[in-house]
Image (cartoon, rainbow, N blue to C red; front, side):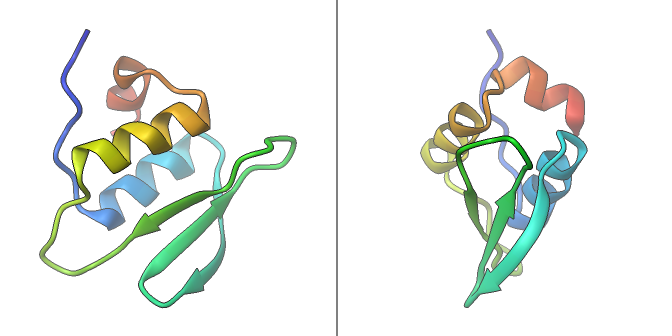
Length: 75
């Protein structure tokens, strides 16, 4: 099993986009992603020059139904 990568919020949004999620709205600095037919919404903080915490990124991957290896292939 691979380690959770260190990514910026914009990179994470782009990767989830490749998995079929799309930008539903932006609330403050959080990009809310949605996927048709999927019950979870993802909330990714996008701050210039900062990375998303590995715990948060892992929980968003779990909510999206992706393993770390599947997510890494989307980068």
